[in-house]
Amino acid sequence: MASAPPAPRASQPLPFASPEQLDPVLQDFLEQASRQLCGWLGSAVQRSPLPGLSMLPAVEPQLHGLAPDALLADLQVVMDGAYNPNHPGALAHLDPPPLGASLAADLICAGLNNNLLAEELSPSLTRLERSLTAWLAERLGLPLGSGGVAASGGTLSNLMALVTARRHQGLATASDAVVVASADAHVSLAKSLAVMGLPADALRLVAVDGDGRLQLPALDEELASLGRQGRPVMAVVATAGTTVRGAVDPLEGMAQICRRRGLWLHVDGAIGAVFGLVESHRSRVAGLELADSITINPQKLLGITKTSSLLLLARPQALGEAFHTGLPYMEPSWGGGHGGESGLQGTRPAEILKLWLGLRQLGLNGIEAVLDGAIARRRQLRALLAANDRLLLRSGPFHLLAFTPAGLDRAGAEAWSQDTRQLLLQQQLMLSRPHYSGRHHLKAVLGNPHTRTSHLETLAMVVQASLEPLP
Figure 1 (cartoon, rainbow, N blue to C red):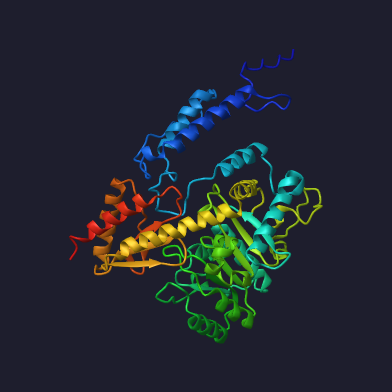
Figure 2: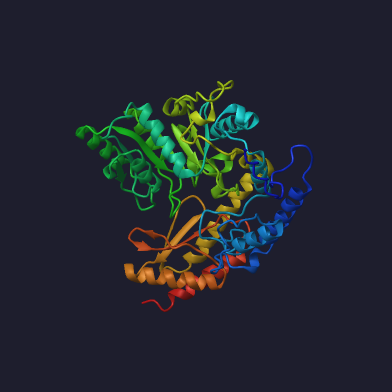
């Protein structure tokens, strides 16, 4: 005789929102989580920018799922141990406070759970991404018909740019192809070439001048040398905002060299390209419009929640040419190609939503105000620190300022940077400690709109006092 099937276990309904009516449990949970987040943001000054060590909640799931109150309590433990970008003394990194609209759009993005892999999985959001990337590209001066794709970070944007350039230059299988960039270019270029299966010497670094800008004669000489060696060049990369000092390479001169030699020019504008969005700051990135491709990261200054990076191209069709594989398990595209074939990523969340809503919340005047404030704070801090001629100050046209005592050797600069950073943290002011040009510096990123004159004056006072006992 056949045995009876086992009786189903009694259990609570699975925690998915009802498709038939408003789910009061979900609504209450999200409202409580929102209050918790707003409380965390609104109490930022009561905590240091860099938190102390905190206890982690349990990591592994229990046999039965947790109730909302227990989940929120666990969340609070993680939040208490998180970096605190809403604090006015958070000046260490390119991580500004988040915009309210971007926060809301991030939540909606998660709730929609659309996938930009294919148009039928994200019909309105695919159109939104195409339209907004086209607007951004043309706003930066790229020609009519330009556009691009959103990506999860500047490293991925740079990688996709180099893969596209390699294919466009007919070097897809060339194992000896190289990329030429400045000595201060971002480390993502080396990562990208490693992913592309190229050796370390595929990245050819060109010397910079005293302001951290690539030297054009040195670039011309390097390209001529590569030509004599028979080494093909897949791309020249200009940096619009180097990581430590925010220098901008001579974009116009580099574009002229690339056009004369028939080379692809990519601009890593992860830090500085946003300054090209408004007329009053466009001169800081003059020549950006001459690029074949541009990386831009609105997350680094405009308060768009992570991640928000884009790769923009004068000819966006080149993305499809580089990454097209066909998606035989999806319906054919009806509007210009599936998102999964416009870059390296297949499954992709609708990150464009938080950029779109955030920019709409700011408006062009708000974008300009964010940029104005960042530049004004850098100028103010530089003026305060320049009063002491013992400091070596390094900056560019943007909102980054690095400095180190001029008379110290390498070991002395390292010790000074460690000690002074701790003194600043005691005042709830957090700076980073990059290693640049052979020695440690302190670096202030002045993109935090909550930072006031009093914070900058305290910062300068602590730094000035740190110099007094030095030889």
